[in-house]
Length: 536
Image (tube, rainbow, N blue to C red):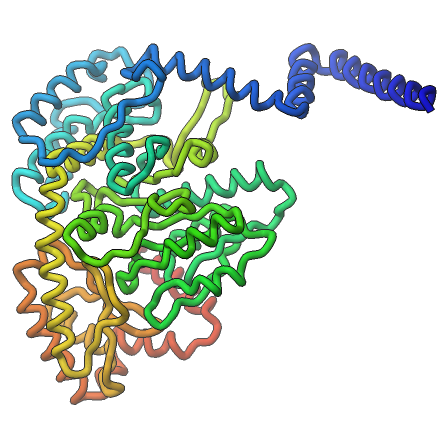
């Protein structure tokens, strides 16, 4: 028996030596060493040791080149209790810019292609004309614009070139994590918006599944039908399948349906806080328990509510647990450019810890142009958006966010109560924050036709389907027009009840036609043609 084992070992050793010799002769030392390292990594514990050594090397490098604590971690920063005065923020801006390498000095050989001068001034003027009012105050708009324009040249593609942008991004992530009850291990990245945040989350979980479960060839995501289409968009981009589950009568995700939909191919569960259609938070606490039980990650799309729900909850509203307080939640998205009152092009994707976040980063170490790495879909990451988001949060502080949340919730409550008083209309479900859906309580009321009449009065209504309803997100600009909106909505409803022909015209007619088409791929083709025509 021992002789047989000895002979087998001799054969294996000889074949291995022969293969390695062949590799060396034909491909050289570099390929031979690469294969040896790959082989060593397969041994138990070796990859963990290598990762630990690399982590220590990177930690030392980052600590020596940035402002870090002695343990190598970045100082934690929370949303300030009160907004920081604009004069002090301007002093910080001067200090931050003073530490940067000025692109105008000609000492940077990548990243910045623009120059100061008349051409750049024209661009900033054009930007200012089309920059939205952020909805808080004139002073807030001014300080955000100042920071945005001050870093309009800069590019955060390389985090080591402009240290001020790196500092701002890590602090935005830290403030957002604190607001959403992330632990000290909670980490993340800034993105260009909610779409990219959700795209990056799905890509991270796909990369994680490929590494941990290589036998899964057809990965699936389970999400309620009300999940934002960016999850479906991510699945389409990256080759996954979304299994949509129904919602209950209150438009909340059906947890039992999610449980039944789980298969060996499932790599991710998704939920919303709140879902955009009706402003209702999914039962995240229950889904979190399920995620822990079955060992699956849970992503919460908080793009819409991430910067509103924490303050609404502090105002005393009954808000279901929706964030990292639920141990099964492994990631959340939150848009600074919505209720964070930052400029367009700013969102945060948060992860429970770095074990999840690391799968988001793309790297390529074999490019002749140098080592390449990127944490997001975009390579170029506009510095102005990062600076504007950072100052927007710090200028408002908790008190500022609470003040505006109260004003918006008061307006929302007035609107919902006013809608309930209009005969033929109703509020769908029990909305949790500053958005809700209006449905028809009377079969004679075609809610899509009501939207058309409102459009004719100058309102730009948003439409839901299955069931047909109107979506309203309440914004700062709506606070002074609540009574006007209710007056016109009542008149529009009465007009539709008295004229059935209105259901056959305009957008109401389009939605009515779409509802009769059983094959939705035809509707998809219609939408493709629409975009091709409207941008021609």
